[in-house]
View 1 (spheres, helix red, strand yellow):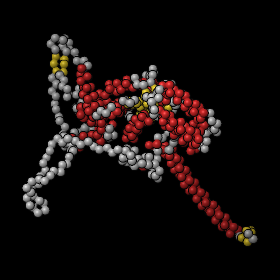
View 2 (view 1 turned 90 degrees about the horizontal axis):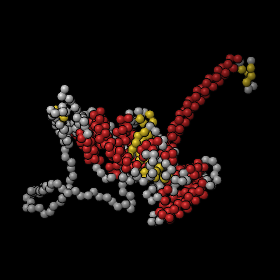
View 3 (view 1 turned 180 degrees about the vertical axis):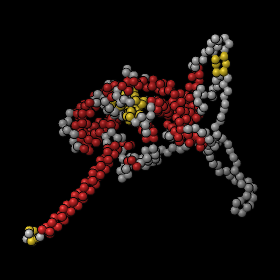
View 4 (view 1 turned 45 degrees about the vertical axis):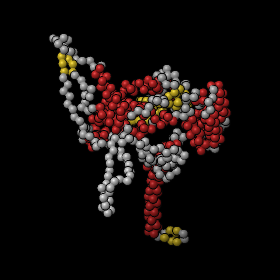
Length: 481
């Protein structure tokens, strides 16, 4: 016999209650297990969302890429749709901007559109009382491919035994596709961002030309090989430039990490795909004796390459704003840094002499030094001041050199197209893919900077390459024996 709460219970009743309590404990443990599982899932979701948020809201993200104030997830927006705004704005002309109208084209043909009688009552018209002109622009129907057979005669010299094969300007030295197919394949890939199988589909749909995705790839590779000489000319122009903007971003090479670098001047853009993110890349592309000014962000490879730098103010201001949001001591530093930059920009709008620029540079340096000397607790603001101090010799280069920009926006904008293509391509498979990628991207970007038509320029370099290769070809020699 036992007693619980003053009531006498039998052994069987005690055992029954014990079993009930044991069952309840087991149920509670199961509930706790389920709750812990749900809590773990929630923690994983929170971690994933925070990771995505850091991608779009951090001091290294330019304003154009930051999320808008909507509830829409950043990944739900189509990065390739130019009409989707990520800064909360709307497409179209902004207030205060002059409208742009299409220029009126001259007609190639005029057709008189007349009517004999009234469509309502059927009464006959005597003559027209006016004209309501309308210009209509149309493109011709897609044309089927022209298939030409070139019977290339070959000859043997009776004197020296040399064999010569006759050439024709429209007959390529290799492959069965002509200049237009090669140019359109490269443009479809790198301008229209089409996969190679889609390029093949496009040729078949529009022109009835049957070719495989592999054939489209080989045609694009031929365009890259034809344009490589011009690529090296662009590199030479950039090596001789006074100011070069440089930036880099990640890309995959056969699934492994690689980097695509951009080197940009006012008239030229060069891309280089390398497996390194170190100072050896700018040394290779620009040459170790490069004497110009490099506009860049704070990546360590740049000061390791050159001491003549201009650090990007857009980056440091974003970092200062971010530090101010995280630590109260950062707000006055951010405001002071921003005021220095705005004041410098306003002062440089006037035509200053070399001496006035030097004086302005000294005054601005003292302002930065006074910010660096502020005492702040450890945290984001201390890190910010450390970056300011580390780049003290490189923040004010633009004050003394009029041709130098205070931001690296030019290089960041130049990387926009490779970043979009990265989403389409996924990974470059091998060295040949890296070669094609950097060559075609460089040619198209440079031609656009210079106001040239990319399609016509691609046709030109492919045609020129055929002529050059024939001019330098060594004919086969066969002895009389």
